[in-house]
Amino acid sequence: MGQEVSSLVHTPVLLNETIEALDVQAGGRYIDCTVGGGGHAAAILESSSPGGQLLGIDADPEAVKTAQARLEAFGKSVLIVNNNFVNLEAICIKHDFMPVHGILFDLGLSSQQLNGSGRGFSFQHDAPLDMRFNPEQRVSAADIVNASSESELAYIIRTYGEESCGYRIARRIVRERPLKTTAELARVIEQTVPRKGRIHPATKTFQALRIAVNHELENLEAALKQAVRLLGFEGRLVVISYHSLEDRIVKRFMQQESKGCICPPGTPSCICKHTPCLKLISRKVITPSLEEVSRNPRSRSARLRVAESIITQDEWCETADRLCFLGATGARGWKKPPMLKERLKITSAN
Ligand SMILES: C[S@@+](CC[C@H](N)C(=O)[O-])C[C@H]1O[C@@H](n2cnc3c(N)ncnc32)[C@H](O)[C@@H]1O
Image (tube, rainbow, N blue to C red; front, side, top):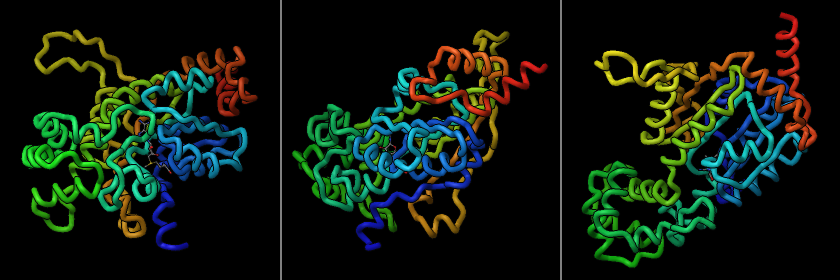
């Protein structure tokens, strides 16, 4: 495989750890909210065979095509949809795909998007300043760079890039614009901020613009809340993030949803009435081994967190049985998953 082609093939990160964290079982149903090149999805389908089912989602129509081709051999066990995971619940209702045994988010970008999409995700390849996961989104990176006020730009670069030189970069962008390509933007940033070590000075600004264009943080927060409602009995939520802003959201969400009362300290008696819906499976974040990082340097910043739904078995069986009974899951010819049958047998025997 030539250099060019190999840099376009996405290597799934923390693959074994993901399968273990999802606790993939034969006959289980799983959602991959960021199906990308289909690497994690293929491993989930293999590990859940026989009878496993997977719903794959991706906002990028090109990724959907790649995943469909990669997962074709799994036939009717897999359904891939082009949508944003911010619509997770609506997608599952439309496709009668709930409750589920596991949900995966592998956030960020695939190698194909970074190196071969021509959509301006990387300053290492000259391309139009676009950065939209889905080309049908209204606002591109060029719109933000060329139409925002200096203070709006500074806010975006500081907040989403955690870039301490955000004001300086914003001022220089405003002076030099219009900027149409990644090379033009990277050059302006390089002339403004000195290079520190091996990290290119445009790295944080590019991250900031991508997050702003795709509303990444807001969408993640909204999708996590929906994901919990779709998990069945002992269903697992697994999230792999690649920068501290994402990881902070995931960590806080999992911690908060695994607690009872979340009233501010000092509140005389509970007013929030919050009840936990998750339990943390691993308190410590899971990171790639040195061996994985040397094999796949893009994995170096990955952080995996996992939690489990604490919906009761009865509640789970009730929802799942009602859905199966209504024929909802029969819409694609899918039968009651074997795991569910087993659990129903156990419940009715008691
Ligand atoms: C790191 S890649 C996933 C790679 C995949 N796990 C694999 O093994 O090939 C992240 C994918 O998530 C998609 N994505 C990012 N944000 C999304 C969102 N809000 N909704 C749907 N897909 C999203 C991107 O388009 C990209 O294809």
